[in-house]
Image 1 (cartoon, rainbow, N blue to C red):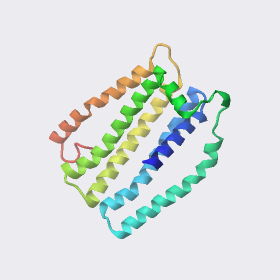
Image 2 (image 1 turned 60 degrees about the vertical axis):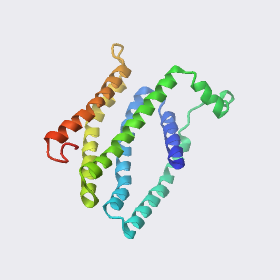
Image 3 (image 1 turned 30 degrees about the vertical axis):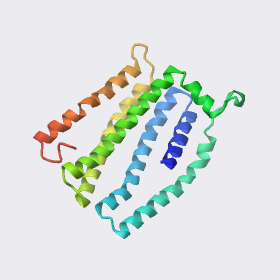
Image 4 (image 1 turned 180 degrees about the horizontal axis):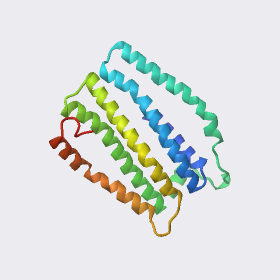
Length: 211
């Protein structure tokens, strides 16, 4: 958890430093989404190998691949170190004072709430998929691994398909459109996910309803 906190904090901070304008942010985030998807796919492979068969060879191979991924990530250090915008160091306070001052900004509190709900939903979807395949569908080993890969591939295709129009949507400012309202409305559609899962599981062959 400590390592992940460090990685997420460093990466999120660097993303802000990379692009000073909204147009650059949209384009950079589109490529970040593709790169993150590829990384997530490669990162989950060792876990699927262990889930398929927790032998000594599988655990050793998965550990070696994770160690290799951690080592090659060092090549990103020079880029992260150069991604830094100009600032006045005399106006930077201690970490706890900076954090307290941020809590006084309504926009920041709204951002915290959005990120909390986003992380909660993402974790629920990922863990819920494994729970459903394992405890509800009764899959294990190679069968469960194949369905996880199939669902992951479907998610990747859908992500790539919607990434292009959403990138264009956020690149241009429209006075008549509140982008926050549009984003919130789209996210609210996620409320129908449990209903869709229930109906799909009831009327479609398993595990097609889950997919």
